[in-house]
Every structure is written in C-alpha cells, then in structure tokens.
Image 1: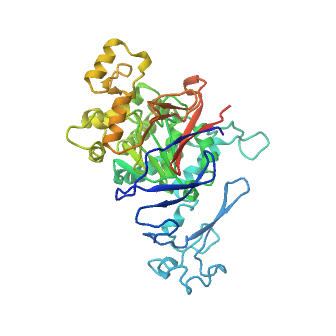
Image 2: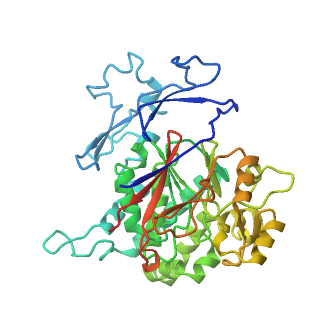
Image 3: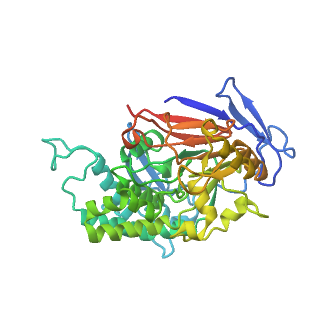
Length: 458
C-alpha cells in the first residue's frame, strides 16, 4: 500500500536521559538502523540485555495464506523435539511441570487433559475470547447456497442466537474491565507500534487491517497495536468492533492497547447510534444490560499513550497547560473510573475533545482569542474543550520533551493528515465514513520513523 514517511528528527534518548546516536546503513528513505550506541558503549559492542530469553510453551502451524492452522503444546514430555530440552537447560523444570506436578497440555480434545499453562490459554479454542473470535469469523464470512449451513451474506449473523452471543460478550466485559482498570492512565509503549484512529463501527475495515497487519493474531505479531478511541457510533457494527477488540485484549493483553475517545461516553452514544444498535441486536433488556457493561469497560480505559518517550498519542488533542505540574504526570493522576469525565476530570475531557486550529478559517476575534489564550481558544465547532495553535503544540512538545503528537478525532480524505509544521499527525481508520469517500489509514512507529499506511478500500 502507499506509504508516507516522517523522520523523527529529534535525537532519541535512553531511559536515563542520555542522548543516543543512530548509525544507519543503506541508502534512501528505507535506510535501516543497524546500531544504537550510547556514549558509554563502543560502536559495534553489544551490551548485556537486562532480560533473558526462554523457550515458548507452544508451537503454531501457519497456513500458506498466513492464517493460523494449528496449535500444540511444545512442553509435552512425549514430544520428540523437546525430549532432551529439560536435561540440557533449554527449558526449566518449573515451566515443564505446573504447580501440581502435571505436564503442560495441548489445545485439542484428543490430547491428555492436563492443566493448561497460562501462555497457551490464548490458543485454547474453548476459551470465551476464542469462542467470540470464532463467532466473529462466521459473522464476516459469506455462506453461499449449496454450502453447509444456512445461506447468509458476509458481515451478518444469519440465524445465530443473539442471546448466547450477548451473554458471551457480557462475560468478556467483566474480565477485560479488570485488565484495563489496572493499566496506567498514560500508557508507555515501545516501537514497533501500529497506531489506528477512529473505527466507528466499521468492522469490515477493522478486519482488513487485521489481514494486512496481524493476520496470525496479535500474539504472534512482532509489534504492538494502539487504538485511539471512537470504536462505536455511526457505523453498523459497533458491537462487533467492541467484541473483537475486547476479545483480542484478553488473548494478547500486552500487545493490544485501547485508549478512550469522545464516543466512549454514554451521553454521546445516546445522541448517536450505539445504544440503539445494542437494543436492536439483543432486545431492550439484554441490549441495555450489554450497553451498560460495555460502557463500564469504557469508563476505565487509559486516556493517552507515549511511544518511545517521544510520540504522544491521544484521541483528541493536547490540553491546556496544567499550572505548576507536568502534563504527563497529571495524566497519570487522572481517576481510573470516569463515568462522567466532563465533571470528574477536565484534563481527560480536553484530551478526548480538543482539535488543532484551522488557521485558514480564523476570524479576527478568534485570532485575538488564541493570542490571549497563549495558543488556545474555545472550540466553537464542537461547543466544548479547546482548539490549539502550532505555537501551543510547539510549547507542549518542548515542555514535555516530546517529538510528535499523533491523534484521531477528525475524518481525513486520505485517512491521515500531517499538520502544524509536520509535528502533528491525524489518523482516521474508517473509510467511507458516514457515506463519504474518505480512505482509512494507520501509522507505524518503527526504527525512528513514522510511516503512514493507507488501506485500499476500493
């Protein structure tokens, strides 16, 4: 797909704050970083890692199409390719035997039913998140006449009993809420990370991104995935988008990350389509129960993220300065449960709602308001939060030692837009939004570059 790059020009730093230099080989924009060395490390000398590798407890088989075909436990004592691993120290005895002395098990009914290790549970087809993913695969598939089963179009549930589906999603909500609740309000992520913007119930585009970026599932992908909010409303499949993202979060909690957008708010959904969608699909009683459970999860979603200590990621935009306090530290102190964020945290509200100013559309009074507000003015278009100027953005980046801001919140014709002297990137990941002709895109933060990747949705 078409790719646009933005070089991260500010020299990166180590966690201790020391500058590092990048030695690149090759030519052109695709030159590959081959070494990162601090002033204390001679070029070409490898530093001892702060962690050690260990053997994974499962093996997977991949079809030529790139989809997952089979999963088996690697640490089965009868396995010929693991038989000598324990004796030679390749696999620790504690990993090979679980707490009650039984061996690790496979994921198939014909295997001995030992207690499963946690790391292989993600591949257990009988787990609720995998049952949900199986149901979603059926949902996205077309069943043609003459094929087994009742014919149905793609992206339809056909004759599936919605009550069972709804109860499975309720159970997933109860578990995934605990995971999100324990996460910091400001996520700290490392590259490589894919960053996706608004989805707005566009399940076909979400599946297209999956096939392009994490076809075998996020657990097997060598990167992380960050979603910037607005998962529901305006599209037809908000329930399915939420079910997919929550199930994948349970399967790969350290790979899939979600932050909150301005449509993850009950009052906004009641004004738009998501609450009505839940009731239409599940009936008034179960539909409202499910809508409440999903919003209980939204209430504890993180608010923002930083990638590689340089790229600030948020749904809306930067907030007004916090008097006497570092903004990033203030984000960490936002209350975990926000069922009414406008009342409970003005900072969280700003992060979810603010926009960059459109300088070409400013009136004289608006320019004066920006000047008096040190780069911030009332967001008259949304009737809440603020707009911010390029000067306000530059000051935010300088004070917080950041290089870029990546945000969502606004539809863009190409799926993305580079703004405000190239330091602000807007990404939108739902094509044909509200019947329009816009494209969908995502951003890859990798090897000190930001690459915009557009989805071919023609």
